Image 1 (tube, rainbow, N blue to C red):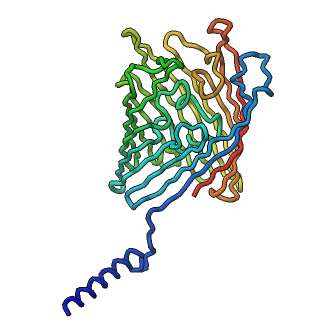
Image 2: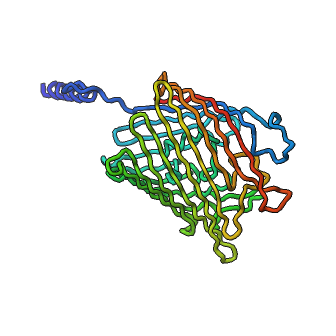
Image 3: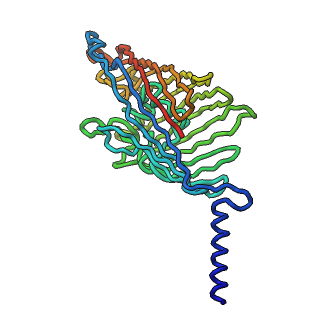
Length: 371
């Protein structure tokens, strides 16, 4: 009899627990974990390869090319109320690795969280607007990609501590500041030299509102090269109704030390985005500008041998216009864009003070899907 009572008690407790877990008590709805979402994008780019025209006799038709943008699939979600994640994969036959980045975040309470993984370095502006560069503009820009990269767009290893409140702030520690080298493996850019990867740290501060308006100011600071070099970035994000706008500028003060003598190379970067949702269309306009002041021997143009935008090492400006078709919502968003980038290039046959202007034009078509 006692055994029967124990069995009934266990069954009753199990039933109550199961009912609670399924949200059957007090009229609540069941909560399913994990919650998974996705983001997918891919497209085509037609370019005139304007930066490859070293010889004025080169014909645009022989240089023009069509390329398939690598497909990217990003998974996001919550494994539990306190654990979230994101993983982005890139599918390309020639890709060295399929993983773009991945991050696991633990929410300590409503304000604090910690995370670790291969993730976006929050020193180059806003994560979401900057991701537009992958289909708006030139697909690569030298402040975060290409020959002048110091802090890569995505780290190999990152630890971050974040706090949400009236002022949102985030501290990131990462260990793989990129040291640019030539084909022979010799260092061609960067500051205080050390073998292997170099530690770096960044701090981001963003207000939820500026004086009650829809503007969110942003300040970002970073240090690398054991403190010899640093980056300062200022920006503002506006999002209200159909409008999304941001502006951002950054200065990278990169120290180069040769034989005990220190020289500062200053990388200057500015960019902006305007987007407006109108009926079934979301048109956008994006611009970027980049230039380097090289110590006491400032060059006014890029190296003459550069043939691709990802190799840009100095002066460039870019303007792109386009739109997304929103009839089907975020589940299926076709897009198009026209991008023009212009840069000054040193004349290889003359002195380094003489430059020639080249223009790269790109047409982009593709699709984005979010869920």
